[in-house]
Amino acid sequence: MFTKKGISQVMVTVLLTVIGIASVLLFWYVVLPMLQPSQIGLEASRVDITIKDSNILVELRLFNIGNVDLDVTSVYLLDESANYKSVTIESSNKHIPAGSSLSITCKGKGINIKQGKTYKVKVVVTTPDGSEQDFTFYGVAKKI
Image 1 (tube, rainbow, N blue to C red):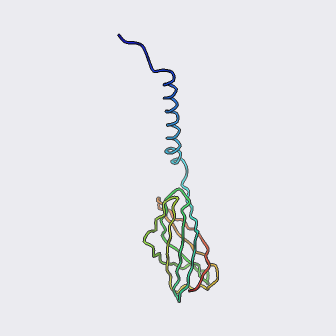
Image 2 (cartoon, rainbow, N blue to C red):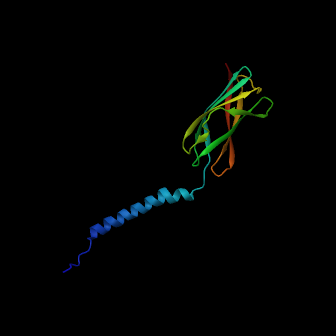
Image 3 (cartoon, rainbow, N blue to C red):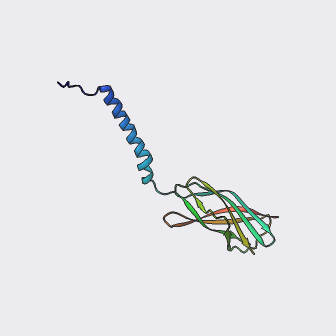
């Protein structure tokens, strides 16, 4: 009636190999990222500070080098009297996904800076858990 045939040893070896590879991939791509701590990092490839009459324009190109998404909440410019002055973020998109970049344009008025000098620009970001962190970049002011 019934023959007592099972699957061959070759098929058992192939199936166990496939199951082993699948479990390693599952661990590598799903479990391991959950075990790693959040890394927050921001770099700027462009910091342009432009003076036009009493108006200040700050243009930033930011790269999120961390593994969590960031939202830019505020931008400050250090003036001649060593006080941080807030500049208004004109860009509607302030969200930088992990591994992505974003260009931001900010405007300020009546901030005392001089052409040719290097100034600090402080960018404050918020993480998904609500914590804030600030990053400082440098740019040279130019007049148009």
